Image: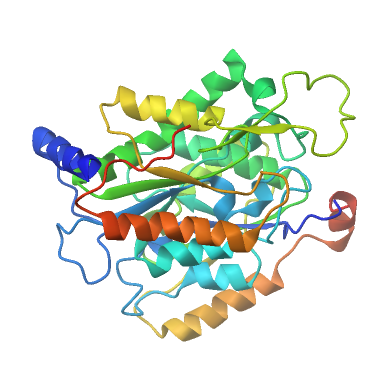
Amino acid sequence: MSGDARGWRVALVPDTLINSPNRIDAALPDALRVLETSGYGVLQLPPPGGHRLLLAVIADQVAEYAHHGYAVVAIGVRGEPGDGLHWRHLAALLRRRGVALLPPRHLVNANVDAAAEEQRLAAFLAGYDLPAEEQRHWRV
Amino acid sequence: MRCAARWRAAEVATGQRVEDGNEPGAPPDARRKVALLANCLLNQNAKVCQGAHYPGQVTPVVEALRSRGYLLQQLPCPELAFAGVRRWWAVYEQYDTPAYRAHCRRLAQAIAPLIERYVRRGDEVILIGLDGSPSTGVRFTSSRPDWGGRPNRPEDDWEVVPRRGIWIEELEAELARRGLPPVPATGWAFDMGRFDEAGSRRDLEAFLDGREIGAGSRDDESAAP
């Protein structure tokens, strides 16, 4: 795919990590900035509530990535319902779409050292990708 | 701003208040700024092959919005969910089918409740689309009525015409069906042929800062063709 800059890596991210009311007072890490530095694209999950149709639409997109050589991870928030990811519901939707390997989850902690949490997140993001053979198959 | 006045009127009319998710440090009922973002502005992997200019986020857009205190609401990508990550390039006319419009309406129905919640609450909501896109174009879309068949077109032989893309048309129609006012909108000029990042950044910042300066006195500056 010459001339194309995509990173082939996508992160599912809770609304609360993107639009956190607590981000400024450093109760949560600045996940968007870490994801940008790490070269990940973002799929935003809705805040808590129903959103069943939107979750189905998001699952359609995740399945499409998972089936075509993209690395997909999920960044949750420890202690939030469903990790902030609607995880149980989303996992069921992904299985129904034939996603055999669910995205690996990394949970960030709120109300601890946000800088340390950012480093932990960056290390997780840097350390994950598809096996080299799969990358070669798809990413040409 | 007439639009803002209408939003507040809508809030009064419905009596709906949503108190969660306030901007940092803001009182619970403060009016927030919310940007609806084309999916690929947060995720370049959604772009058609050879269309990605960044690994992940479109950094200048995200920076411009966050530095001005906007909350971000990503829209679904209609093309990726319909034709897949390995779709061919296409123009407005190729996506202008009943099936694709029905798909866009389903996506609009999926995201509209979140948008409606912001608007009813009295938040200032704007939309940043993708100019030149057949789906997500705001001021411009790509057009070539004779595209079709074997995909062997020479490069860049489509035209850019002043018109919404199909996804934006259907999203705006869904918001109107819900009785919501038009959302002020502009497009990041990605799919206009040669991509000019500095020019696109100036254009976006002028739109955002024009809203700040003009607050209280301006009409809907949506650059509808």
